[in-house]
Length: 184
Image (cartoon, rainbow, N blue to C red; front, side):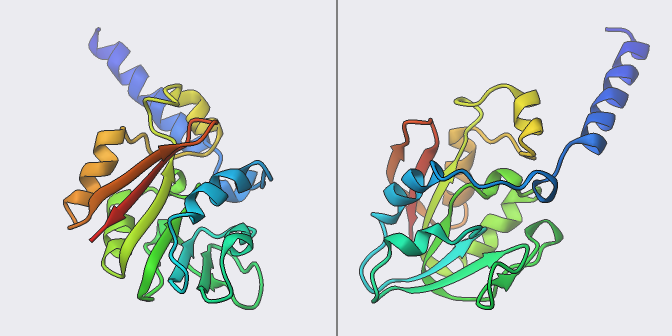
């Protein structure tokens, strides 16, 4: 590839990044996601305190017991109880909990390493769903969905392991969402 072709490729990439949609612009909620949340919720113990990062419509609450203590965190106020944090501005809740629940959120986080670092320091278990690049390889589709990172399964596992957590369980939904359970 010529030097000129490389420069053109870089410029096109930068233009795509500049013009890509953000979650704020395309926000929508598909009730089919409740199935993924239901599967993930099975890894929450009765009485566990739960911080739901990127809580959206707070569908997780439907699957918790009255003994669970729930806190929803999102980039905008969903109700009076929502804690507002913009993860892409490095805003995180300073809340310790038994479980940090991350469903359909990490794909939209630019600095995923900092996000993971903050989460693992405040919980003993992380329950996370993620659309790994192996299962969703079309990067243009990922960008149209406003996903800003492209982690492989092993990259995600390594990111948690480097911060002192170990993968204790793994599952996959019928729609190819990977579910990971990490424990200290």
